[in-house]
Structures are given as structure tokens and as C-alpha cells.
Amino acid sequence: MNTLAKINKKWKYVADKGDKWKILPIDGNTVEGDCEDYSLTVLFHHECKGDLKKFLKMFITGEAKLHYVLAKTNTPSQRGGHAVLEYKPKGFIDNWSKKYISKNQMEKKHGHIFKKKFWFTTVFYRLLKGKIFG
Image: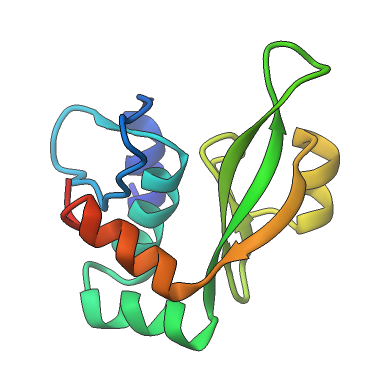
């Protein structure tokens, strides 16, 4: 089983308090976190094979970007904040799609409205705030 399949099999959405972003361990029975945690965990474990320097470099060079989107909620007329990872050249992934798809598919299939990209400094700050690893 590849790392992405392992993460997806164990993934359980759990909202955090205070918006502290973390790279989650994937060796336990479950991987629990929110949308930012999912994106960061996939990039770190699946794409970077646990290499923190490579992970940080990807954000600095723009090879990886974290996007803020407005996503549909249980009340269709309302939208909530959500995070989506863009990893070049594979595409976009989040804890809803659980696989890489195009931006167009992300918008059509999940109804995401892309609003902004988080600067790499924001990603690093929030990871430090969350103590990087969960």
C-alpha cells in the first residue's frame, strides 16, 4: 500500500482549536486532523518521504502551495473556509477528494471557490504555532 492510500485509509476528520497546523504521524491506527493537517501530512509523508528540508523547499519554490477556498457546508447556501494542497505537477488534493485532481474538477465536483494562496511564511508560521508535528 502506498503512503497516500495509507493516509486515506486511516484518515479521520477532527476540527482543531486555534487553527494550529500540523504534520501528523501516520503509523498509528488513525490519522486525525483537519483539512490543513491532511494537506500538509500528504505532502510531507507521501511526496517528500519524510524529508523536512524537501518539504520546506517545495513551499519556498512554489512547487507546493496551500490554497484557501470557500467550500460548501451542510447548508448549501453557506460556505466555510477550507484548505487545498496544490502540488506540481500532480494537481490539487484535499481531504474531500483524497486524490489528485485538476483545479477545474475541484471546483465542479466539490464546489470549491478558490480565494487565495497562503504565503509560504504563513504556512511556516502556522506549522510552528502547531509545533510542526502533531
